Structures are given as C-alpha cells and as structure tokens.
Image (cartoon, rainbow, N blue to C red; front, top):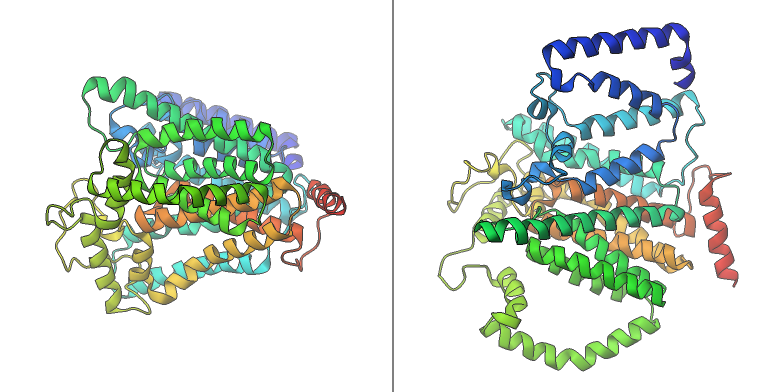
Length: 515
C-alpha cells in the first residue's frame, strides 16, 4: 500500500480529492471541514506503521473515553471525554449533523483496520510481525459464533421477526471474532502484558476519578439523583483492574507489587463505591474464588486460607446480624441480600428483574431447542411496567442476556454462541499450570477473571450488548489462546513464528523452567 500511495499520479489525485472534499465541506458542513485532511493523514500513517500500534491505541481510547451510548452520569453532566466518546460510540450523523454517516468511529476503525490487515497479508507485505497462532478449537468456536448468529437471524426472519432490532441483538457477537483477530495481530505475546495492564488501570483510574468528581462535586451539592456515576459496563474495567493487581501480587508477592496492589485497589474501590453497581462486588468476589481455586498452594494461598478459617465465625456472625439489620456498617450485606431475594421482597411486590426473567424463561419453554430467532422479543406472560419511553426495544434485550440467548436461540443457539467462553477458561487454566514466568501466570488468571466478570454481566446486566464486555472478553480470548500456544498447553498445527518477539518470550519461559 505504501508503494501504491507513493506513485506520483496516485499521490496527486489523492491530494486533489482531499482539497476538493475539504472545500465542499467548508461550504456545506463547516464543523467537519477538516475531516478529509485528518482521514488522509491517518491513511498515510496506517500505511506505514505495524497494525499493533493503531489497535492498541484504539483499545486505550475505547476504554478510557465515556461510553456515550450507555448515557454516562445519567445524562446530567458532560465530562471532558464526552465528545470523543460520542464520536466513537454514537453514529456520526447524529453527532456531526452530516447526513449519510450512519456509522460510528468504532465501526470505521475496526473494519478499516481489519481490511488493512487482510490486505497486507493478501499481498505479502512484511509491515506486521508474524503472530502467535491461537489454538484451533478456540478459532473454530469463534467462527461458530458467526454461523450461529447468522442462523438465528435467518430463523427469526422466516418466523416473521422484526429485523430492525435484530441487528442490534447480534451486533456485539458479530464483532467478537473481529476484535479477537485484531488483538491477535496486535499483541505479540506476554511481553505486551505490561502495556495492556497499564491501559486497563489507566481506564479504571479515569472512570473512578471522573465518577467521584461527578457524585461529590456535581450530583450531591446539586441535589441530583442518579443510580450510578459513570456506566453499568464500567464494572468490567474495574473488576479487570482489580484482578490484574491481585494476580500480579499473588504470583510475585514482593513489596513493590504489594504497594502497587494497594494503590490500584484503593482507587478502583473508590470508583466502584460511587458507581454503586452490585455486580461489581459480586464479580470481584467470584474472581478471587476462581484465582484461589486455580492457583497452587503458594505462601499467599496458605496465609489466605488460614486467615479465612480464623475469620469465618466472625464473618458468619456479621452476615447474620446484617441480614436482619442491613444498615450502617452492615450495609454491604444488604447489597448481596438484594441480589438473592430481590429489592422489593419486603413489600410483597415482585422485583422487575424477577418478572422479566420469568417471562424470558416462559418464552424459551415454547421452543427450547431452536428458540424464537432474532427479531422477536420475549413474551410478557406477566405484564411488565412499560419502559418503551426510555428504551423502545426493551422486549428484545432482557437484562439477563444468558436467558435471552436461550429464548432467542434455544439450546442450539446458546451452545453455538457460548462455546467460546468455555474454551477460553479451558485454555487459560491449562496455560496457567504450564507457565513458569509470574507475569504469564498472572495473565492467565486475569483472562479467567474477565470471563467471570463477563458471565456475570451477561447474566445480570445485558452484557452481550455491551461494548466494554465485548472488547475485554475478546482480549481475554486472545491472551488465553496465545498463552496456551506458547506454553504448550495446546500444540499448534500452524507455522511457528520465527524472528518474532514472542519467540524470545518462549525462551524466557524455558530459561525460567531450567532455573
């Protein structure tokens, strides 16, 4: 591509096109007049740099800026990152007012980078390094997602479904394999884990401080009521950051990692407190349990077990007292109580989520093997409160995405879509027990933690339709797959990468084992 763009006729033609487009927009839509020039510069840069740099930059931007599509800060405040978030997460015709731009910058970036990477490989350009191949079963499970959602779309269409909401039902699942392909091309191996960790922690810190500022400085003094600080899906970023800090210290328990863990956890817990999402605490606790069960009997695990045994009676007493009087210092008990028995259990009124889950299960029972297909909402066997004025397509997107997947795809659709989740855990755990470098082992644990958080978000808060859930889950798939190949947890049948930085990582693994 670089050689093609450097040809004089092609170069002059492109310059002329950029100038004409800029002048045209300057007359018709002045706010976006510089867009052609910016696009031309981006194309020139992308033609010269390896794919890993724009992909990692895109990852950092998406995790750090406001996820505008989820109405951050309840729409009561626009943070300094609001406009950039709108550009990436909302259709450009809505943001800029320019007709015809019915897509987001995410769409443009993801499919543009995918096309660039495919083109480079098709013509044999050496701009990008060879990648560490993912295990074939993992790749096949990702391709199975595409086949399954295509079938669910067709099945829903043949059954008279509404195809407008159908495309939003499958959008994030469609992008899951695409994100994995880009991350697989961009992430060389464990030597990039430190960069990924910094991106995730930076995103968690940004969300935590902005959320705290909104609640303390804007919402409370102004008497504004809000159920959350930033967004529901920030739980994924918070839990990933916490798991990263804990796993790094657990695998390499030195003073530096200990103090780093305290700082990271302190800031993120602050953000979780102001964001006030119950799933965040439940997910992190389950991540700790997963890490405990997977890890061997290290000194950290021995001390944690002894402390747990000693504290168990006090913990049970705390829960018993808090269950009857969940206020003050016992308010954390109320958080877990509300998830088990519902928020309105004392009033005799069924919780909205309980009624919704009942309806989704009833819908699934009508066709348990094949489901309804996309384009169909769940049946309201028990009438729900009408929230169409807030969310027009609420019947097509139940909060429990797992039950929703069963209702829309049946056992067949659920298996075809969800198989990659099981494979991700399988390869991450196998790689963990075959890795000897602490950073590699911590990476495997973080991959499992992301899966735990993703599963909880899907089960409790529309995780399948969430951008952050999709992006971080794709990251977990990539990490688990690469570690499985590099540690020998799954023998790759593809060509082994040579002269590759990942190869030096394998040498590091072997050297650590011999010592």
